[in-house]
Length: 133
Image (cartoon, rainbow, N blue to C red):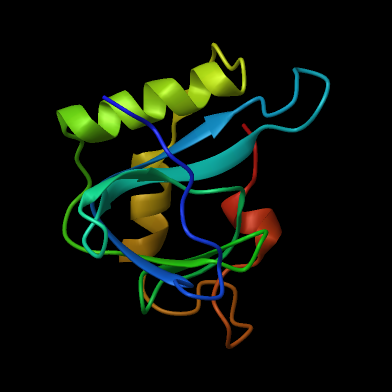
């Protein structure tokens, strides 16, 4: 199954993912902080997709923003299918990542906790979404 790059942000800045999960990986080596990435099925493009580094999220809208400004909205419960698993595995291989932590349930708990968990009026900040254990 082929893997290709996603569209630049300008023509497609918003992506809706179903059957999604959030993983934490040692992006660019173990000496750096682990980063979090969404993996799921893109409703718009009808294929598996992996996000760049997640920076912010808004629990009330279930929207995430990446470091490069792309916005993702997750719909429905978390999950995974064969296409997403394939894309996730290929993404990890291309970045030579062989470790991961599934942090979906941790982030799901924050999504369920209601709007504005930090009381800042804008959803969680980068530290909240990318906190390593």
